[in-house]
Amino acid sequence: MTQTASQVAPGTKTAATPMRTVVAASAAGTAFEWYDFFIFGSLQAIIAKTFFAALDPIAGQIAALALFGVGFAFRPLGALIFGRVGDMLGRKAAFLICVSMMGAATFAIGLLPSYQQIGPAAPVLLILLRILQGTALGGQYGGAAIYVAEHAPAGRRGFMTGWVQTSASFGLVAALTVIFLTRRAVGEAAFSSPGWTGGWRIPFFVSVGLVAISLWMRSRLSESPSFQRMKDAGESSRAPFTEAFGQWPNMKLVLIAFFALMSAQGAFWYTVFFYSGVFMQTFLKVDPDFTNLMILFAAVLSAPLYVFFAGLSDKVGRKPVMWLGMTLGTIALFPGFMLLSSAANPALVRASHATPVVVVADPADCGSQFDLTGKAKVVTSCDIAKAALANAGVRYASATAPAGQVAVVKVGSVSIASVNARGLVGPALKAVTDKVTHAIGAALTKAGYPAKSDPAQRNVGLIMAVLAVFTVAATALYGPMAAALTELFPARVRYTALSFPYHLGTGWIGGFQPVASFSIVVATGDIYAGLWYPVIFTGISVVACLLFMPETRGRSLEH
Image 1 (tube, one colour):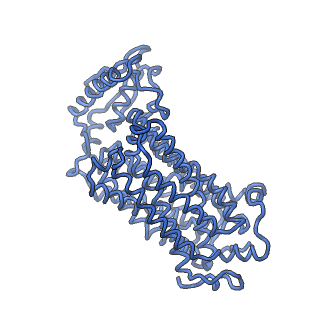
Image 2 (cartoon, one colour):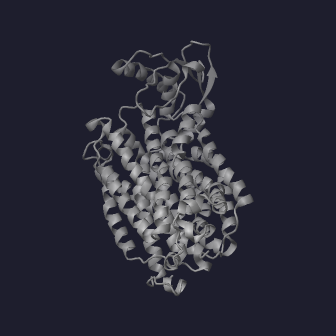
């Protein structure tokens, strides 16, 4: 890895940069930016309580997950903005601006007052900072992947860019480690406090040091040889948008990248490294420390696997490695999550089989189980009953009752009548809701439904095995992707054409995967129903990759 840029691209004006420095600076900078983004996702439960205190518990949970997705929703915009900068002014300039924006926005989140302190302005400010984060990250990945690929020799392009892919796991490991250590150092109560002294703010402040290191490392890099050669020859694009999206040969490649690769990458990767944690904490009632430890295990395992599968693609091709990864992921999701349930909370699985829960309600009485504005309240008998079961993480079936009948929750042979709370507000509404929730909880406890996962009954080895299978599938898909996407697009519009479908897939499909899957579960009462989201999107890529994705290994990056 000591080869220099001048060796890769002789005859350019670019100063010789050791390949080791190119890879290290690009991967480290990307890891630091992923750290900034991941701490928000990992702290979504505390974010819900701190900034969405006016919402009902389920609404607050979904609002926090939706806000996690908001940052991703703006990634395509960042891809367009910084893709244009990268194709017109250079790769280096684009990602230096990105990392500066990302660091400033993340630090500012740690300074935000809570809802209790300034009211509705708190979530508004948080949304604005998430938008800045997402926009910055939209320009980051394409720059790092292209920069490394354009320096690397063709025969080792997959292996070299694999280090950019593995930076995501480094960022996740760093985020989970800082959160875990801070939580242990200050205690759960102090860590979760919404006030100025809340320990959850510390991981956001730590990002300042990481971003400073990233800026220092990246400022020492020279421009990529491919771009420098185009610039010296006067061949760099003057209209990247028109060339990338207005010319069918390039637009066709954008569509192939999105449907054949990014649909699966967005849906499956975020299911493995984010939604699995939400699933274990919310539905399986596993404590946060153990959940984070298991996700940390998966992240650590993924680090060498990204590089392994990326290097393997240098030998056997990008397409077969990625296709096998997404196919394995599609097949493994449903049985894997069912095994996860049996391993993490066997008492819950036994109770759901022995004493199933049914909500008998008038369909007209059943509305949405969440509200992101905070204006609507859970007041119908059906909504109150389903919200109580969702908060308990209990799987339930639905049955139709006659029109106008109050909803009834059946826990085996025991029936608990809900209540219609229309017209009630404040303490009166809370008192009625709490009474129904308590009655349902008592019936669930009597039927053997555990309030939380019992560590003594967990099968930790099986949990790790399931997560290992998911991780192998995710890394086989993602490991070769930087090389494949870089090789897929022509040099003149590579930054723009690569970044947009990548961030459309990871941003819109991946970023909203946790909230979409969670919402599906709440609406249906089936804790596994949310898996249809990643299965459908990953299945689309399995077919599109097989039929339309060309093999790109060994392609020249000059044309």
